[in-house]
Length: 224
Image 1 (cartoon, helix red, strand yellow):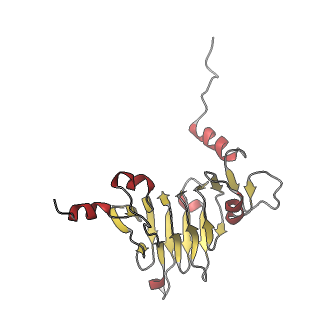
Image 2 (image 1 turned 60 degrees about the horizontal axis):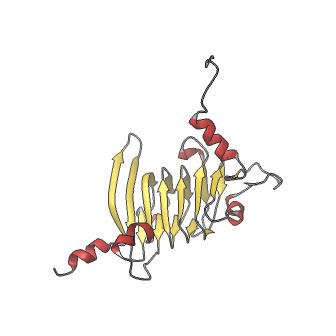
Image 3 (image 1 turned 45 degrees about the horizontal axis):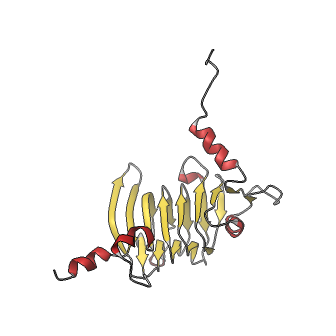
């Protein structure tokens, strides 16, 4: 028996199958003119509205997807379909508070989010994971009003230390470029910036950090 023509499916073909299967993922494609194809939407807002908790939304590469104050109230994953985060850009025009507003546990991956004025991502509740993205606030005389990430989350009740990492609100950033604005992260609740790491690449800086409640500090201050 010859195995010369037998090939296992490559990881890319598997990825492509998952990305294009209408029953598994939702897709955003600006070239879509009607809603005849199931699971494909012309913009991010309609895809978010039609999604169900736990869905993944694949956003097509090429061009710019315009977003403004889109509220996400259910667990979702938004992924850029390009090879690099630069290939899939979400643009928030001036006059909007944020590009995306999160009120549930969500994940962003392989995306560029650009805000002309205001913030790229507004985190109000849940656990927000940002992986391999680019967050940009455009330079202008009102830079002090811009911030790539803003978190207003506050813990409404006491969380046990054993539950903190899995259940509490927070923002978790990995391998992400952050450019422009007054500061990378602005918090107005009781979350704090922690565990910051930076890698200096040739043309940019890559950040890893968490924004969450500092329960450890409270425990350390208790008398023995």
